[in-house]
Image (cartoon, rainbow, N blue to C red):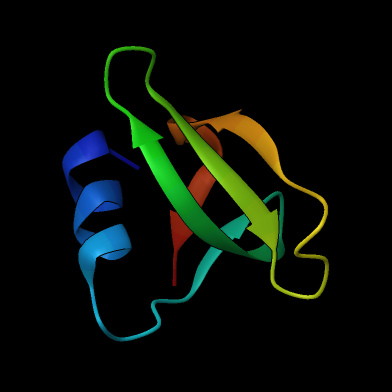
Length: 59
């Protein structure tokens, strides 16, 4: 996923289906400089992590 699309998803008022390694996730923040995103699985909000934008897929 590119950083522009990830930022659009973060700003969107509607839920967009995005996965990381097949797991449905929520994007909290996008770091354009490092091409990463702060995410967490929808069913584990306490399990935050940073991942490469290339690992995110919109469905």
